Image 1 (cartoon, rainbow, N blue to C red):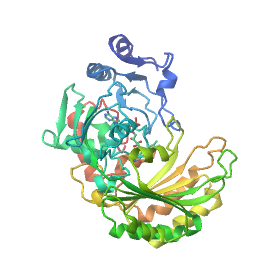
Image 2 (cartoon, protein in one colour):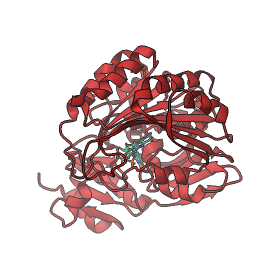
Image 3 (cartoon, protein in one colour):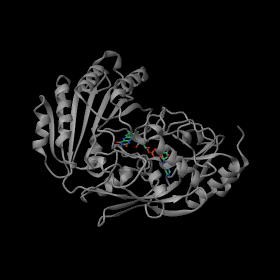
Image 4 (tube, rainbow, N blue to C red):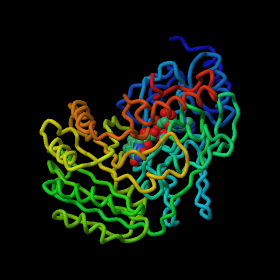
Length: 450
Ligand SMILES: Cc1cc2nc3c(=O)[nH]c(=O)nc-3n(C[C@H](O)[C@H](O)[C@H](O)COP(=O)(O)OP(=O)(O)OC[C@H]3O[C@@H](n4cnc5c(N)ncnc54)[C@H](O)[C@@H]3O)c2cc1C
């Protein structure tokens, strides 16, 4: 398709950069962080400021193209033909008010920068497990963190946002000035405005303590049941993740994990040691390895082994309303089937606590769910990634009977749309907000159900 003159003209007008398909550098710039997604936008823009963003909106208006704000492309989900991808790296403001526990964060900032800046302050960020995910993309998509039982979803911590509306108005919005827009920003952000900065409430956690218990896979049925039962009595200050790992027999892997299956329970308390509660899990099996003591988000991030370079990641997530014995057994049996070897990691996150009582209205909600599961087909150098898709489909089918009414946008697969995150009324309300603020559809409609 020939480049529209409105875009060619923009190349001279922007203070930032605009790469067209014929430009050197376009090929690398068009790639999303998730390299499994192929996208071919008409251009890739890196605006320097709000005036550049306004010029991009005008060009979209003239040319009939759309703007797809995509800080990194961790959450890339489509081909984006006919869209201009907008990278927000120039919006790099970061200021922390440690008196009131509020961070003001530019739309190009990634979580790693905030986690590092908060180390030792007594505050933690409502950040996900990856330091390279953008604060904006995560928060505007709901965002579930290590501390969500204590502090709620990332979007619940969004106090206000600086928003550029498609009509060119740039202003600070909060629940008092535009409640409907804030509701939509909390979970379906990209559809209703270009956010240039966010005001985020931090989670007060002066005494972060953690326990990391590794069990043999044979103990998994009893240990997962013990974690499930712990959810009944656990205070909101206790956050629990379970990881079931099945490593391939690949010479590239370290000897101690190569070809092995194991289960890890990670407990995090924002209220100091909780050894008695952890003991209920500890007694359910034979602990092969244990690390217990004070910890911090930076230490957790360093130990998490999340990829920090663009990767062709594949996975499937499910929010479950219940985790009964039958579901636990079916999941663990499924896990051991030889044909599902590509599915190396299955993570279970305990929900509840603050997630059951959101402090602010938002499209994103995990109120209907009690567990969040994620199955991962990671890319390990030297290990073939195929097959794997069939295992992910089977994983979703297996858990469908226990699926909760809603999950969050940040846990959707590339093929899934927002009707999995809200009711028909929620999606209709979202369309209503969008047609009010973006009547000409200048912003890419992304995951809106077709
Ligand atoms: C290794 C890894 C670990 C992860 N761990 C977690 C986790 O623990 N918890 C969790 O909840 N998620 C997690 N995620 C998912 C991640 O949070 C989402 O994919 C998130 O959307 C990525 O944000 P991004 O900006 O980096 O990605 P992008 O794909 O660049 O952006 C995602 C979407 O956000 C919107 N958006 C971004 N910026 C703006 C803006 N300025 N204005 C308007 N709209 C905007 C757009 O709709 C865009 O499509 C993880 C992802 C990876 C790859």
